[in-house]
Structures are given as C-alpha cells and as structure tokens.
Image (cartoon, rainbow, N blue to C red; front, side, top):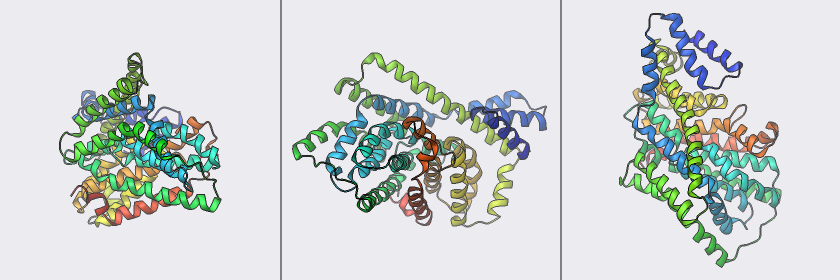
Length: 424
C-alpha cells in the first residue's frame, strides 16, 4: 500500500502538479484501490477535520499582519536602525542582515517572507559595500531560518496541530527564542570573521543624532515582537489572541501612524493573505487525509519499528527525527513534511521520554535548515526568483552557513535545556 501511495505521488509530481494535488489525490486513489467499499464521505470528513482546529486561526492573522508590514516601511526602518549602530564595524552590514532577518521573523513567522522583505533592500547594501553577490544571497537565505524559530513561527503552529492537543503553541513560541538567537549569533560571529579575512570595506559611521533618529523610527516596529512574546509569556493573551492583536498593531502602525499604506490598499493585501492562507489550509487538510490513510494501513507503526526498533533511546529518536525532517525539507515544502512525519514520530518520541516541546524545536529547526539547503530547499528558489539570479549562483556560498546550522542542530539535540529553559 505504501509503495502504491508513493508511486502515485511521484508520478503526479513528475507531471508537474502542485504539491497539494498529490497530497490529496494519492490517498484517495489508494483507498479506492485497496478498499473500494470505503465511503467517500469519510475521506472528505478527514479533509475537514484537518482544518477545524482553532489554533489554525493564528496562521491567516499572522500572515495578514506580516503582509501589512511588508507592504509598509517596517523592514526598512529595522534595517536603518540596526545598520546605524553596527554598520560601521567590520562585517557590520552582514550582522545587520542576520539581525534584521531575526527581527522580521518575529513579525512574519515565515522564512520566505523574510527572504523577500529583508533580502531585497539588504542585498543592495551588501553589494554596495563590497560583498560578492553569492555570499550576500547565502547570508540572506540562511539568516531567514531564524524566522521559523522565533515566535510567531508558522512552522510551530503546524507542528502543534500535527502533534496533538497536548502541545502548547505558546510554549513552543517561547522555546524557540534561544535557538533563534543562537542562529543569529553564529552568523554574526562568522560575518565579522569573514569581513576581516576578505578585507570588506568599512561603511561610514553614523552620528549619534542620526542613530537616535533611526531608533525613534524603529521603536514602534520593535514593539511588535515584544508585544507578542511578552503577552504570551506573561499569560495576558493566548497565541490566537496574539495573532489578532498583531493585525491591529500592524494596521495602527502602517495606516494611522506611519501613513505608508492607504486604507483602500488593505483589501488587496487581505486578498493576497487569503490566497496564501488558502494554499496553507489545503496543504493542512491534505496532510490530515494523508496521515489518516497512513494510520489506516498501520504504516507509521511499521516505519517506527523498522527505523527506531522496539525500545529506542531519546537521543536515538531525536537523531532519526533530525535526519528525516532535514532530508524531507530539502525536497518538499516544510509544511507538508511537518504534517506527514510528525504524527509518525511524535508518539515514539514521547514513549522514549522526549519532551514534545523539545521535539517541536528539533522539527522546526530541521525544517528551517532543510528549506535553505540544496537541492530543492524552498528558500533557495524564492531567492532565485526575487533576486533574478541563477540557481547555482544562489547556492554557491551556502556550505559554511549550512555547517554552522548543523552544529547548532547537534547542540539542540544534545542539550534539551537550550529549548526548555525559558519554558520551565
């Protein structure tokens, strides 16, 4: 049954169907072949079950807030603020890029949105100061990984949905802060060393009055992650409530205070959000159906027994999970991988004594790493389209960043406290 399922998916993908079609059609065809008497209402019910969770309300609202701020001047205000303080040091513009990607990740929750919002203005600045284009693009692509680790991460929301009702989205958000900062610090240190070795020219130092001016302009955008993280951490509001507040905050900033977006443009931004959200929800619904068919055929039990054995240790489970999710996200959209693989490995991980919050950080970290890794990481193709550069040039300078991320991934596996200390 599994062989038939995979063959149908591969054929549909080779025929250039979008991922949502194989994800839904393959399970339906397989069930009609192996159990023709099965009611189609049952299969359609599984699709609806996949998108009925209240936590999914976070997704369109956080995307809408990010779209509003991307359409405005938030990303430029963040770049100007960070660059004013560190741009003049050796490697300062690269550090600015890593910091801005982390901060914008705390607004968008999406690696691809971060590549677009930060990549466009920051690439021009990096090229102007003397960086090679391939290195600039590699830095932008991999720095965007932090967007899937710091709240409000869409990947964490999808993981919480796939792992079951016992996983708190709020705790996942808090647990991702330290791993996200680790990614930023690793890239910042590397950027300083790289700039000294390559003798990258220094940018002009910004005066203190100008620094204060840039800080004043960035003050309100900087309040966005503080509002979301602080509100959830203190228990003032839930992640779903935080997503609604994020939209209100974005509207107040960009429409009423900064006046960068007219009211008449909001419907078109909402339409764009709706299109993205519909694609995400179709993938989530298809993932539920796919997972149900796998469970119907007892495939998860067969996979876990074959790969993990009967009594695996927590460390062994986390290593296997890291490998599967990393490789999976190198080829397929992270949302699909999280939806399909999480129900397979989460029960075995919990049985082995792995905290499901810690598992969620490992899963989202590997999803972020895989999405920026050749051959088919989605962020690579996003960058190629945004920057209009060939694939090979985009990936040319990615190996050092991938190595750093792999090292961080090992540390997160070996030391669960890095993920759980803020939660506990």
